[in-house]
Length: 238
Ligand SMILES: [Fe+2]
Ligand SMILES: [Fe+2]
Image (cartoon, rainbow, N blue to C red; front, side):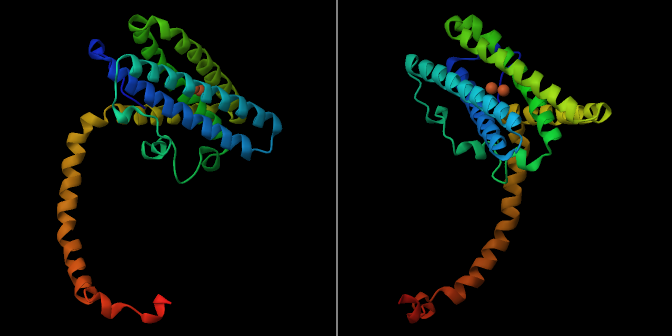
């Protein structure tokens, strides 16, 4: 879920490339965590092994993207702190959910379909990025090509597994639903900056509207709580 411009690709400077690489790193690391959790939770040994393999692939992708990004940052002296990989931000950025892992929230048939559809979408995004980076930085593009092959395999295996777990009509209905939601999520994330001009004024309006209520409630509390010494229970200090 990151910005890869379609029309103004010539304006895609090295800083923006580092930004995209950092987002790819975040997505890969999160996928590795999700797969590790799934491997730990399933009782099917064969499936657990395939989840572990998938997890190791995603972690390898994370390492490659991070290595390329750090190389570019060093070479072009890019010191922006927001280009650092910070694992805690995976929740805030929406790559991981604090309320639970995908494997906990979905049935196995839906989990595999979700993974398959999102691997396909991610693969298309990476292909677009690869085509661009191939011209500008041919020396690092071969590593990205290897990742692309892995992603094609992930999408292929997840889809096949999902087809076996769902009956054919249900598979296509769920497939279309996941694809639509997947594209919507990426569409929203890619255009977050452009959409902010709609959402920020609404947010400011809501804050301004509820501020008098909060202020009034605080005043009421303050009247009774202001005498701090009076409210201290001496027994509570022991
Ligand atoms: Fe990956
Ligand atoms: Fe993948």
